[in-house]
Image 1: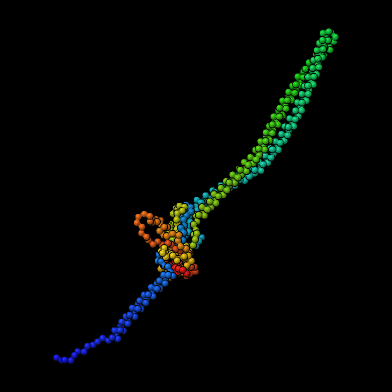
Image 2 (image 1 turned 30 degrees about the vertical axis):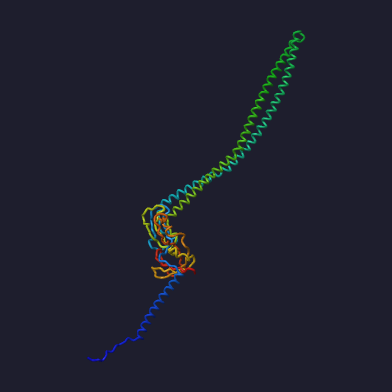
Length: 406
């Protein structure tokens, strides 16, 4: 055996130190990158709030029939673009044309009744004035006739007084002549004359008294005629305004009937116009159910128009994200379907959480309560005049990112 000792190879110390230095450098760089990434994420989170629970929304206008009818023509189909005022659906207008003709006929009749009643007002006014004037004249005539009869009665009374005086004198003469004829101091002829004169005077008294009674009765008749004329005049004066009011009320009633007929004509015209359904807004047709020949009822939905010219984003942010978010802040909206971004701004923040606004909101006062972070819908508007807005559709998923505190 050889006594020569074996050679031992020792590792290079500089090489080991270089490897440890390289590993430490890599570890430091990785740690620095992680720290930088964490800082950037923190810095970004301090300036932006984002969510993936968001979608594009728009006004969806349901188009319904306002009258019953049978569809005769449909002008549009699903996914077709329409403008406000474009025809959509036609209904059979025959029944509504007939109804309009009937309403026009009733209006013409009502207006003719108004024309027929209007002259009655001035006629009644003239008649009332004439009746009052005639009544006043009758009263004046009756008063004059009564005054004349009273004078005749007074004259007849004076005649009665005169005839009674003459009769009393004749009776006195007759009494004296009876004594004289008994003594044969006067002739029979003179006595007969005195007897005849006494009888004549007594008859004159009777006649004058009858005339006085007749005159008194005439006065009563004239007084009754005067009272009748006065009563008739009072009635004319009392009823004249009422008769005129009645005539005017008849005219107003007929005018009201004419107005009602006019309203019926306008209603019939409206119903006839409703047989042609046009687009109230511009947009894209959806959910068309109208078919030619189908009979539809008033209020039945025929199609829906989506207003794609007025779009916004409904972003359901968590309630913890709304601490610094407010209306007017700018936003970046990423649309998944187009894989591009749009500029926008926060228009407003919802009035309640989605749970509260749901059909069946949770009742936290019953059962076991588990706290769940709620979401509040926030409306984000697209800034106008951006290319590609016409390609957006309601329901598209988006990821909005709102710059807060800016």
